[in-house]
Amino acid sequence: MNSKPATYLSLKNKVVFVLGGSSGIGADFVEAFAKQGSKVAFVGRNEKLANELIEKLKNCSFIPKFYKCDITNLKMLEASIEDCIKSVGDIEILLNNAANDERHDFKDMTHEYFDWEYQTNLRPHVFAIKAVIDGMIRLGSGSIINLGSIGWMRKNEKTVLYGIFKSSMHGLTNGLAKRFGKNRIRVNTLVPGWTMTKKQIDQHLDDEGEKKINEGQCLPDKVQPHDISNAALFLASDESKMITAQSIIVDGGWT
Ligand SMILES: NC(=O)c1ccc[n+]([C@@H]2O[C@H](COP(=O)([O-])OP(=O)(O)OC[C@H]3O[C@@H](n4cnc5c(N)ncnc54)[C@H](O)[C@@H]3O)[C@@H](O)[C@H]2O)c1
Image (cartoon, rainbow, N blue to C red; front, side, top):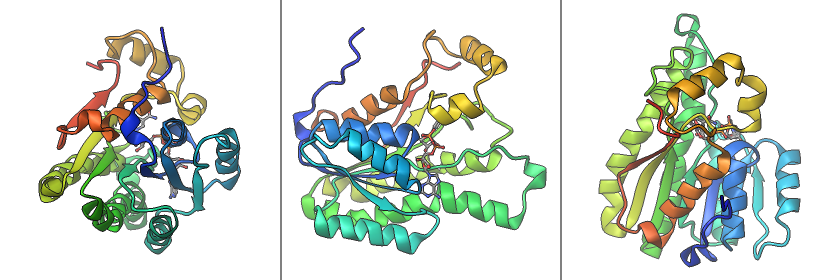
């Protein structure tokens, strides 16, 4: 099987901003877009992992720019986006990727825990869009990709709050696709299945998980970060220019 991603000429020199790009699927986004010749900037908390990623991509036409930022801090997030716009250019592609799928029991929920889930899994994404939207209007073009999840679709009882905010991505997508469609700004939800990041393999994939994948997916292979990036590249490129207000599910056909 040829695993080299397609080349999208329309992505060259486009400014791409990734929330949560130091590790996991987000790091794969940074790499995939940088290799298309896009100008990638990303926020994250782990400086060491970010620097390792940047080192790996140092021969790209634009070396990705990292902002150390905890996205629960909106002022910090907005300042990072503002600096990117000033120093790199108007952001045309936004990947609303950062999240935390921490397991929890609904009965243990406190006010503080609810607020933390909301401040991690929904609020930054909404304000990141608000911070990039004027630039996209100036460009007359934009692709916003909100990361969803199949977790709540599969009725995962261990991530109820995460599920509430991940399902909200669809409402965010639909409302804004209509609001800014006239400006040729497209908004879609990209929904990963159970994707084999290092964190998922180290913390969550066990024998029972393997069994669930075998029984749940139509396809026998496990979903990899690059499978999600391949869909993101397409959704960001001109090749998908009439696709908006959609959910694209990449889960190996989970039933
Ligand atoms: N991996 C999966 O199986 C899976 C399944 C369904 C949906 N998703 C979605 O795909 C996206 C990426 O998933 P992932 O598995 O790579 O997630 P992840 O748990 O590795 O986190 C994504 C990134 O966000 C960063 N992040 C988290 N909280 C942050 C904060 N407060 N400030 C700054 N950065 C922060 C993490 O450090 C990481 O780099 C998420 O939106 C997730 O909900 C993933």
